[in-house]
Length: 520
Image (spheres, rainbow, N blue to C red):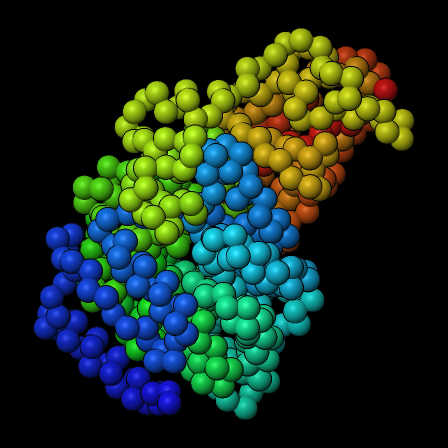
């Protein structure tokens, strides 16, 4: 029989009072992890075993993980396999919103396949705002839609149209989780993530913790979902309004406490405060890194923050915060566990691959190939095509000659369907730029637009710069981002620069280069 919600709430309040008053010892690096039972007493045995596994890793090792966008399924996981010879221990994806909901069944099927191959499963849900139709939900006007306390209260009030829509959307996702339960797949379940931030509609409200409790009770009691480990996942507390404790639903509703951290390479990066406060709040529960762009620093993990039990790097442009060599080094380090090491965490590596320390500089030479050199040789023929009377130049046609991309500053490349010739370049480093010398009477620029993209400054022949916005509330690959005015026939040079600015709806500064098309 399930513990009644009121009893759970009372237990949670008692624990929180004890925690805040100092009656419970705060977490520290030298405390041994004491295994705690799952919050749901009806948790299935396979899921219990997974939680026990995580407790056994606390203070000892860390599991590697990689998130994959729902439309990509396992694209980034496969990339890491190619780069490192290892498969991350955890595969992650998203039940998504808007057009992304079309991939939900594919995500379930991929999760089952990943589990059968020996990989652990982590699932996120960017839930569309109640009251907005799923097919009309975009990033800025739905997921990040401004929501005041009165409106959030309406969402949380039974009997309202918004509350009914909230339950309906939760029930739809529950159906997919039920498929995973029927297939015997335990899930690291992380809904309402980064709830201590103000960028999602569910974040920073007085009743944000109640939203978590509502889903927990509905999923465990109404739907009988017993294959979930409930991963409460705030962002790093960047200011007082983001304090973990303000939004914590209570121990009776949580199995794992995790933290998201972006721009982790900054001075404030892996702050000890973020780690200690999460340990203290969890009262010895396992803690993890739910999302990050940059990989954690191994000396920090081993010396001062050894209790993280897994990490998850994100998809998209954030994936390229780390180099191929960084990932290869990370996945082959003796402190980091990959899929092949889940059963034997002390193993020294899979056949043909030696587990080693990232402190060894030679790792960078032996695990991954060096970055390709920029060539000034003429571009290969297949990279330049004539389409509809325009000469198309691929972004990987690199050099200083006519009809080549010449990059300066910091740029990275990415592969993926939807991009011309399945690749593009991108940068968020201010004043990084590319230029193309061409002969013709006009030029078009193509790239990816997305919710975390910024504004480029574009100029022709050294003239005045014009602003070109790469923002869109939903990702669009291969978009025409700018078309020049009609130019005098002849030789010209176009420059595209990362301006370091964005519009109010954007969450980032990235600009992309997919191809250029020249009008002869």
